[in-house]
Image (tube, rainbow, N blue to C red):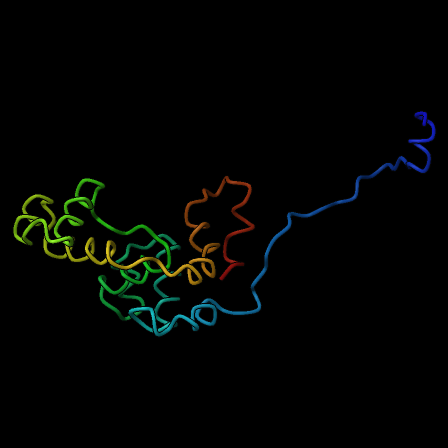
Length: 165
């Protein structure tokens, strides 16, 4: 087979066909509808979790996101953790100390002293160590959380911005 036979039927055009970026579009449902199946597993309602997530991903703090949803900052932090966001205040070494306390190798007083975390930070770190994120819920909101880390100059910012809410 020669080049002529291989090239037979190939056309040259003046304009290239425009192809868009392939996306998975789940805009047929709202964020709280996407979180509804996890209502029983979240520390707040799906509607409140959606509000926490929306406010947090728009640049708000965990506390501000909680206040916007009418829940405490701790509930907001737990919700974000279960949705896949890293909110634990503990460093890897502090997490090891917490794991030692959870295993019964340290007293709580010693663990608190060694970690140097305040009561609230310690409680949140323990929650994060004892509760895994909800995989299916994480998958449902991953586009929303990914948009938080894109700069406005990133070429994907339009693909993951407001349209995913």
